[in-house]
Amino acid sequence: MPGRAEGKVVIVTGGARGIGAAICEVLAREGAKVAITDILDKEGKELEEKIRRQGGIAKYYHMDVTKESEVKDVFAQIAKDFGKINGLVNNAGILGVNKPTHEVTEEEWDKVMAVNVKGVFFCTKHVIPYMKEAGGGSIVNIASVYGLIGNADVPPYHASKGAVIAMTKNDATIYAKDNIRVNAVCPGATWTKMVEDIIIKSGMSIEEGKKAFASFHLLGRLIDPEDQAYAVLYLISDESKNVTGTTLLVDAGWTAK
Image (cartoon, rainbow, N blue to C red; front, side, top):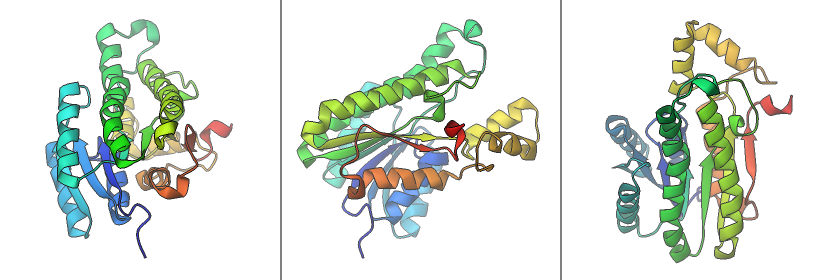
């Protein structure tokens, strides 16, 4: 029986660890050929080898999403290596500073926007021609519940994820005629290094921090990266062929409150 992503060539940005790594592993298990992109070369190459050992097809590429020429060149190489591109997961993102808005510097604001917003723009811009050539495709943007609600912290991150949701809806409208679908996944508190770092900086123990994050969710638990990956798998697969311009919440009920 073919995998749910059989025949897809999918680029995953920020794919070396966390949610991105889980996405790469799940897509590869389900038959996709996965281009892992990141600036974390050691982790990226290790993930490539792990997927290959498990029988999947993956290749790691060093790529900084904030550099348009690099995005363009890497996408061209991926298309050459795999013959086509019909999937893109814009997962690369950073949290940025946790200060009140009036204390955030221009440099701190721009750093988050460069990765979380401009990176999505560059990758979408340069994947579209390949998807048109392939007869269609699926773009999945990893946003956040922070793009939908306020949580009195990390203002640049909130703003960036709100922008990603707006970009998702608009690009879905622009490219529907080309059979290119564009959707977003909005994770709640998911156990990644990003969340672990927040806990460490707060001075709480890991267990205290996990309980604090879990308390945001109606289901009372943290989310596993693989849970986000399965949402992405659905949106990349043909199972979602009539789904575009939507925001899929995997937030354990956080935003239902």
